[in-house]
View 1 (cartoon, one colour):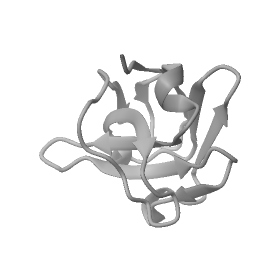
View 2: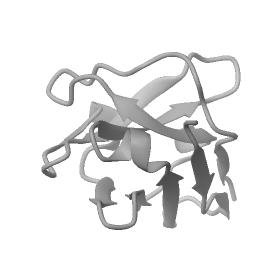
View 3: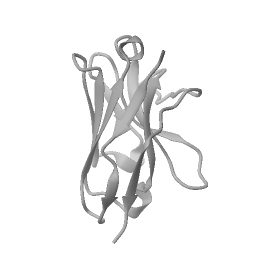
Length: 121
């Protein structure tokens, strides 16, 4: 059974930082690239950061230089450090596997509950 449990979201002022965590079941984590997705109100879910099993990363242009994805393979956990947050980063953030890091090709299907990030003054 696939389990994805996201945490770490909250309310932060513009320019602030948050660190998200995602605990994934071993069956999905150990053999897959992983990524962070987000879905803002009225918009489609988008993949914003991805990391391969070996640690190669890629980002959507809107978060490059501000977000950093990392993974701890021993803990089956993936992280997203978010700095210099902007109101447009407000969304529900989800983690899931990624099909191809180089092209930022994400997946559809099963999702965890996500974690809400709200950037507002």
